[in-house]
Image (cartoon, rainbow, N blue to C red; front, side, top):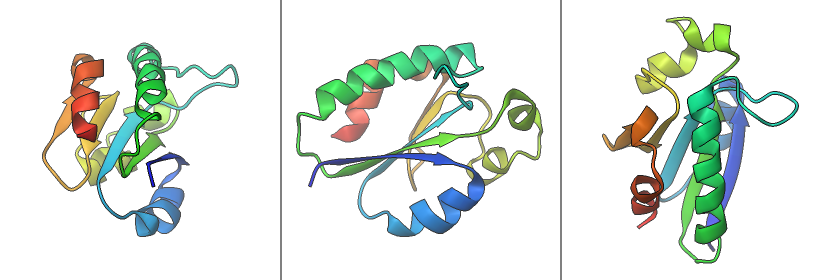
Length: 122
């Protein structure tokens, strides 16, 4: 087994394709949509993406059975809408946010650090 890395764009993909396939420990990373060059419109998300890449390189060497789901919450105007699907379903207030699915454990904005995220894997 090991880590299953999943990227999800759109609520249909999350609810109909990704969610039913999840078993075991699941970490969800909410981030703003990325442009063609790969960076998010959200400056804090660009910073957290760099942290996630570093973590991925480290954690991939282990055989920890965990799902790591990146959910792209939309373009800036979609995210800013108070009725944004992910704001409502997951009670999100800011991005980036990383949470341990089905628990109250979450890290928002500046709390998204390498140490906090690595601790979620163990």
